[in-house]
Amino acid sequence: MTARWRKAATTAMSAAVVCALAGCTVDNSRLDQTQAPAAITVGSGESAESQVVAEIYAGILRGTGSPVEVGSPETRAEYVEGLGAADITLVPDFTGQLLHYFQPDSALTDPDEVFEELNRSLPEGLSVSDYSEAELAADDAAPAENVVPLMRNGVLTEDQVKALNVVAGELTSDDLASMAERVRVGELTPEQAADEWRAAR
Image 1 (spheres, rainbow, N blue to C red):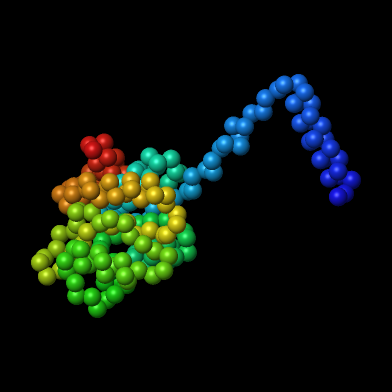
Image 2: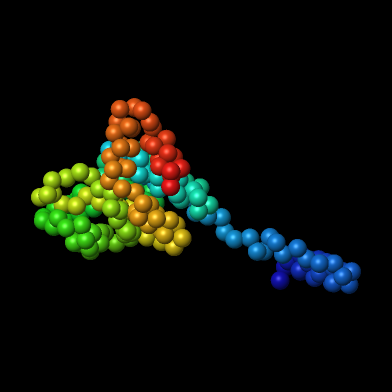
C-alpha cells in the first residue's frame, strides 16, 4: 500500500471512530438511491398512423419515470437499422407489413397467425409485445395490420412493457383512423392527437 493510500485509509478510519464515539448517525439515503431510469428513444414510420402511435407510446413511457424522446420519421429499413444499432429503443409498426419485411414470402392473413409468425421471423435482439386490436384498413385478402411495438430486447422494464400492453388493449381502429386523418389534414400534430387520446382514457 502506498503512503497516500495508507493516509486515506487512516483518515477514513479515524472519522468513523470519532463518529461512533460521538453517537452520531450516518445518512444512508445516498446509498439507497436507485440507478436513474434509462433514456428511451421512440422511433416512428413515415405514416400519420405511425407518428401518432409513437407519441402515444412516448407519453405512456414518460409516465413510468423514464426520459423519452421521439425521433424523426424514417423508413422501415432505417428504423430497423436504428434498433439494431441501439439508436432506437422501440417503434410502432403493423404486424402484416413487418412480417412481410422480414419474411416476404409469407401468405398468412389471420391476426394471431401473422403475429406468431412475426415472432419467429424477428432477428436476434428484437421482439414485439402484445398487438393491438387497432389496425390499418385492409381488404379481406390482405394480411392483418395490427399495431404492435417493435422493441430492442433488455431495454424496457417489465412495468414499461405492461404499460405498452395497456395501449394495445385500449387503442381501437376507429381511434387510429380518426387521429391519423386529423393529422393528415393539419388539424392536429401527432403529439396533440396522442395527448387527446390519453386524456380521454
